[in-house]
Length: 542
Image (cartoon, rainbow, N blue to C red; front, top):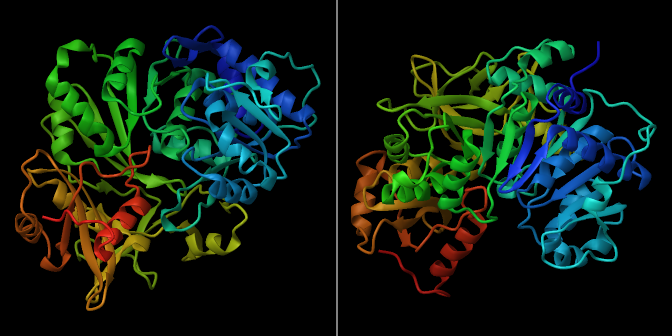
């Protein structure tokens, strides 16, 4: 028997349902037969360009049909797909592509000018595949993606096998330093994702078993967040392995109307987004007029990455009472730590979930936290896990630790354990604020701030303070032109959690700066706050 790998998995899906739609973006559709053929052609082109087994291929793309198609081509050719943040500038691309040993870049034409500024610094790249987005002609140093995809592959094009040992690289964002490439074996990743979905697959590849799981009328899944981030990408992998279709938004920037139009048009059954950053504008749009869209196909909303506040969840469920909302907590290193489900008429605590069998909460000296004690500990996740961080043995040793003789992933998330075993996340240690000797986790304060009736959004950071070491600063967005006072906000926090966790400064902004994945742009936020601190920009604190 062979090992589970995505090339064989998707080839089997294509064999079972060749005429079913696999990828959709507006009027563009790709059926499985064509997707399989084109992925093979692209992979063969990369072999002809001199790429060898497990060479890295970067997707420098907005969400589009070509993103997943080129990723499948990597699996087919025995290459390693490598996600690229399309907001990066030349220096960041230089680091990422050199650290990742990138041999090919698939890119949208809109990024050609940025590539021009870095191309001579990434000498390992052998092939540039240009995806036409109407922004200009194909550069002389690139090859048109569409030409390659439509060039038939010869019968003996691949001189090596594919296997479950083939790797997928997921580069994490740099909120805790430079981006790190999380390296997963495909077999470990596939089986881990299935386990988290409550589906038990045999340890050895069994295509007859896989075929029994493939739906002849697969439902559509929509990842509203960027595919360049793990949460959006991995949910697509699982949908495709069951014969489902992946729907894409038409617009590059997130628009609530575009999302609702897409659910209606493509009859989307499952939706993945990133907390309040996506849900709030959708709720506001639905409040203005729900009858415009037929959303009856939608059954599940999956949220990951940032806080999804209880108030916004209930607002969404008011419009979509038959939908279940799954808050998934995890990371590229751990996949899902756990999840909490919210349905109409049922509330759940934000950032709380039932721990799975392979999840522990351990103190810094390696003891398991006693349930109900209020003691804080670090999440540790066992079972199938990544190989480590690509080209970074030091950071690998820091995150992947041996506890009681077994290897665990310890990504730095602090949590408590309730008497009934419920785990409540507090925050990531690398973002912890130390104020007057007390540790404060920004997420804990943000949840309370977002519960203020007059605040639409909030982000908390720590800034240097000569007396306390660090001072807590909140950047907030008001719901209306009438802003609540600073004292009102501070007292609201003090009424819910310890007084030392209340912000000492409150800055109002028109909108919280956020990245395309919905997470706060902490670098921009910190620069703005420090500018106010130093007086280089007039403060707008209440």
